[in-house]
Amino acid sequence: MPASSQVHRCNGRVFDRSADGDFELKTDHQIKSLYVRKNSLYSENTVYPYLYKTDFVPGLVERVRRMIKINRPDHPWNELSDDEFFKVSGLYRRDLAAGTEGFTLAALLLFGKDEMIQSAIPHYKVDALLRKVDLDRYDDRENIRCNLIEMYDKLMAFVAKHLPDKFFLEGDQRISLRDKIFREIIANILIHREYMNAYPSTFIIYRDRVEAKNANKPHVYGQLLPGSFEPFPKNPHIAQIFTQMGRSEELGTGLRNVYKYTKDYSGSDDIQFLEEDIFITRVPLIPDVIENVIENVIENVIENEREKSILISIKNNPYISMADLAKKNNVTWRTIARDLEKLKARGKLERIGPDKGGYWEIRNNEQ
Picture 1 (tube, rainbow, N blue to C red):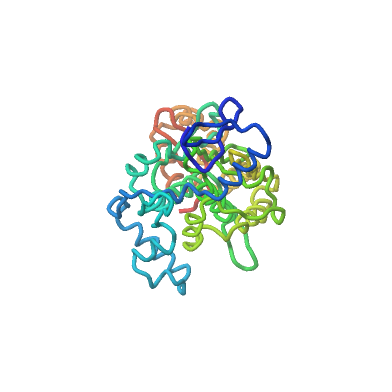
Picture 2 (cartoon, helix red, strand yellow):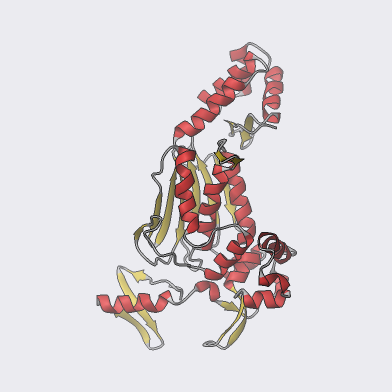
């Protein structure tokens, strides 16, 4: 087993690694002492003496610093050089125990090129899946292996691609419930993951829920509820960068936001944040939310009755072929192709996957 900040078990037994050998821990007190010792360790602080700035994605550090400056114009980091920024933010440090100095795992994860991250953490990735129709495999998939800054963007784009964004006013200002909820879910996956654990991180959209799983170093065990737990950073330096960029809230606030807005988005607040060795997040996605969006799209199509007929057919069978659509509407497939292109151009329809084997999805994105 790799040395890490987690407590590992082998065949149900816990061992303490030592220079003289691996010793089995048999009493609750011994195991508790091991947890206490490891709770002071953060794998994100692992120093890589041979990691250099040239191993970072060009321009990414500058982009992050610009975002921090926009979000926090008076932040003291804004006046620092890049080298000072790395040291003050904890991304470059000296390991006094090991006698090494250099960029940390946190810096590599935030800014590193794909191949450099994979060389250090071969198991590193997040699988984003859509499972609405094909529950055994998937309807759409993104296998994401880039740095955390770009991974956040790709996961948010996956959400925007597959989940509706309901109209909602907070006071007299329209806000995106979808973004309010899922920016916190995605930031939580990336910020609090235990990266030395090879358990695969997943983000899956089902018809009735969104479910995320990632390796974790638990501080407490069980369901997390607003106001009933003490926020505990798993990767404090990564969390600090995301917070200063405005991509996550201060510790604990993000969870409250998810509870606050999910009721309006899904019609249910049956939310689960389960703090275990594998952290599990489940946010309800009542099928009626999607069905209502589809029905509204169909009802508001005013070009002609054939377009409405096409959308109804697609709602009943997302895999329907153009030949079958043409037969149902008693027109040629070229006419159907033109209708489909018009619906796509107006943001009412999107093709998911290839022409053969893919399917249609009704959307509500006005162009």
